[in-house]
Image 1 (cartoon, rainbow, N blue to C red):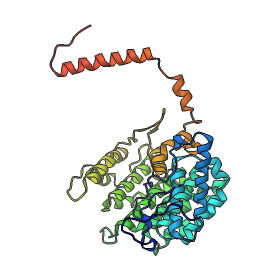
Image 2 (tube, one colour):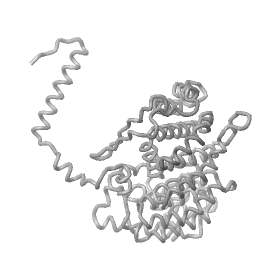
Image 3 (cartoon, helix red, strand yellow):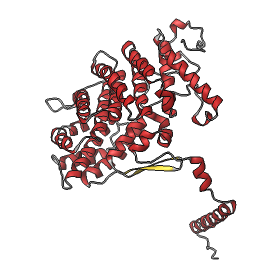
Image 4 (spheres, one colour):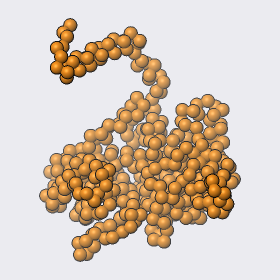
Length: 428
C-alpha cells in the first residue's frame, strides 16, 4: 500500500521533484542514501519498546508492521524504501519472533523482490532487513531456509561491479551475518569466506608494493567484506584456522597500509583474531615476521600525523593499543558491556568480533536483543532471559538501608574533599 502522510517541503516543489530523502512516511523517517551502514534511521513512527506492553498498543504496533510489509510490494521505489526503513527500525528495536515466524515466508519474498528490483539504497535497506530477519528467528530451520533463499541474490549484488558500492557493502555485511547464524555446515561457511575474500583482496598492495587507489565507497565495501570474513573466521574449526594462518597472516598486514582508518582497524582485528586462534593450538606461536608486524602496530598505536582527523586518530590509537597487546603479549581484550541488570564480558577477540557484528546490525537495539533475544543470549552464554521487574523487586534495598548508604558516602566524600583543600580531617 502507498505510504501515508507524504508532504512537500517548503518552497512548493512538486512530488516529482522531491528526492528520496524528502519522502516521509507516518511510520518511517527520512533515509539518507549516504547514511552509514551501522546507523539506524530516526523515529520511524513506532512506539518505543517500553510503550507496547498493553494489548491495545501491541495490536497497533503490529498493524503498522503489517502495513509496512504490504508497503514493500508497491511499484514505486520511493514508496518501498520508507517501508523497508520502518521494518529495519522495528526489527532492530524489538524482539518479535512470534510475529515474524507467522510471516517469515512473506517477508523473505518481499526482501528478495526488493533486492532484485531495487537499486542502491533500496538494496542496502533490503539486505539489512534480511539479516535482521535471521537475527529475530535465530538458528532455526526457518532461518536456514531464509539464508538459502537470499544467499544467491546477496552474492550476485556483492559481486556486481555495476551496482552501487553502498548496496554491495550492505550485502557483504548481511551475507556474513546470516551465514554466521544459519549456515548448515562448515563447508558452507568456508565457501562464503572465499566469496568475501574475493572482494577485499582488491585492497592488497599492488605488485610494486604501493597501495591501490580506491574511492571512499569502495574502501567501505572492502572493509565490510573483511569484517564479515573475520566474523566467520571466529567460528572456523582448528584445521581451517591453520590453513588461514598460513595463507592469510602473511598478506593481511598489507591492509595496515590502507589510507582508510576503518580498513586499518578491521585488518588489525583480523590479525589479532588469527593470532588468538593459532595460540589456542600452540601457545608459543609467533607467526610470520612478528617483529616487523609489531613495529607497524606500534606506529599505528601512536600515530600523530596531522592529515588524520582527530576522531579517527583517537579511534585508531585506542584500537591498535589493544591489537598490539593481543599480538605481542597474547593479551586478550577486556571490555564489559552492561545492559539493564546484566553484563557480558568481551574477554577474547572472538567475542569482541561477534558482539561488534550484532551491534553493527542492531544499532541502538542491541541491548534490547541482549535482554530478550534467545539467539544472542545463547551466543554470549547469558542463559534464559531475566524478569527485570522481579529481579529489581527482589534486590531492592529498603529506604533505611539507602539512607545509611547515602550518609556513609556523604561522610567519605566530605573527608576526601577536606583533604584536597588541605583542611584538618575530622575523626569520629
